[in-house]
Length: 393
Image (cartoon, rainbow, N blue to C red; front, side, top):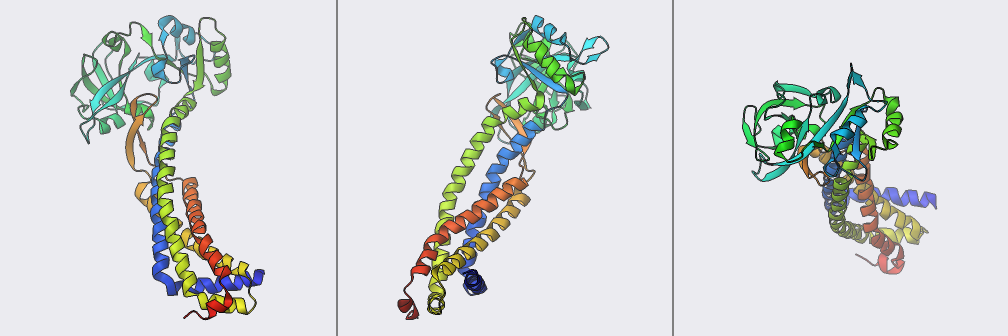
């Protein structure tokens, strides 16, 4: 049986050149499906990578219990002080490296379309720049506490108009002057605008409240110490997580939507690819009817014929999968864009990520499409009556 399968399969593969036109159509159909499949899912991969990779392993985010984002959290100053006093918090001299932060949403026009979009406006105190020590001012200067000044992240500068250095923007019934541009190791905070929290609080009617507290750990192994101290403190009702875990959770909603849309689009295109494969393999069987009948008359069974047809379809689909994956990688990997983070209602900048795992998924999907399209033609080839087939022209 194995020798028959090998002989028929080799013979079948050698005849592909005689059917190059129809075979090329099948390959191109799979190429198109894989390009779309990989391109759409690379959006989800890139967004997840941007959110997960944005976290500083030495930073901890403290939110009010029951909150899944900063927007639904809230603390007063007495809560902030209790958090800063907890064991495990790093200190700079006598100052605890615990940064209370106010987060509100401002509306700014996008550069490309001019349509208003949401941009996070984060109010911080001077200690924030010791906690977020990767943040660097790359143009202009830092804002002066007590003044209506803002600094803008690199990604926000690229995405929104009116945020150029030296310009004045209106947000929250207040005029803000852009005095600096900052980078933060390509984290999601580069898509934000920062200002003095004590100036933003009265503008947005927040009194003396904050959304979250970012804490720098004294050492990475002190996380559980800090978490236990905060969650058992009767003055507090909080959840404590690594910053990287917080950002990873923030990516789940967008990732789920994009993946679902990607699978739907790829599924619809896959139906077309299956019909193309069916047509191609029926053409292959029809052109080799007498050849197949002769093999059957010589004693070859139906199973080797079926396997040979399925193998040809798998090989053609694999070629299409490899070509489609290569094109998708060359065209989309690293492509910069932005999207709405539905959990924080703000724009997040990120790059498409065509990962090896995603390329493997595309190749597997391509082969599956080819095999599904070859089942009926392979069955027909195996069941073709020998006498009738030998009379075919």
